[in-house]
Image 1 (cartoon, protein in one colour):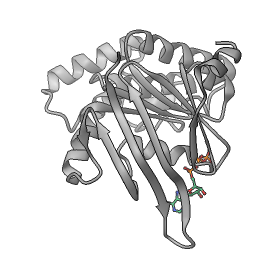
Image 2: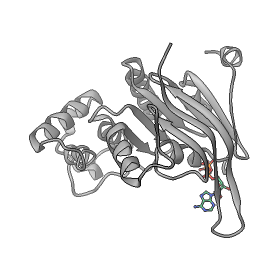
Image 3: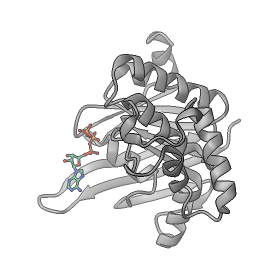
Length: 234
Ligand SMILES: Nc1ncnc2c1ncn2[C@@H]1O[C@H](COP(=O)(O)OP(=O)(O)OP(=O)(O)O)[C@@H](O)[C@H]1O
């Protein structure tokens, strides 16, 4: 049996900036080592809120969240920062690369706050660029790369230090169909090599690549049962 890596118990999230918004209603969810979970749902359903809580980018307002058995909600912020920096990698729709820095420097920046000597950082960054088949563009400015190549650099940055979980928020949202397929193949290869992956997407084609399917609607999180996943052509 797989080990539980991420365990949400009764997690809820409300925003109180103005009129209260209950973005996530009390939710239980477990992600195991090696899972590939896709999270879908309409706009405003709570998908990014769920991803932000899972990725320790935001705190829930209720419940408990364990990462590899360590409770994080009531822990010190420094522990959440350490787990996020050392165990999690993130890929966003917008690529979030720095212009004026080369591709390999961008990948290295993802490891800046880790205790990795500079030379080792460069070696890891080059290996990650090689993994996404972009070693030959290591010294290019991201502004000179195509959208698909930029997202491959962003994936290299996310995986360079071997995160326990790769979180992707609309990873193909800015890409055409050919580049979408390339990025999905790459994420699929990483998963086949053992990477735990959580992908948030509007796109059913992207969602179908996941092995587990979680749907969020009006803040309610539901997982499609295995039989239903099978009928969807998996
Ligand atoms: N910082 C915030 N303050 C107030 N309300 C927020 C905040 N962030 C999100 N919300 C609200 O919480 C709800 C869930 O938002 P969330 O971004 O999680 O949805 P989503 O499913 O990711 O949507 P989309 O697909 O459009 O990105 C929405 O009603 C949104 O307006």
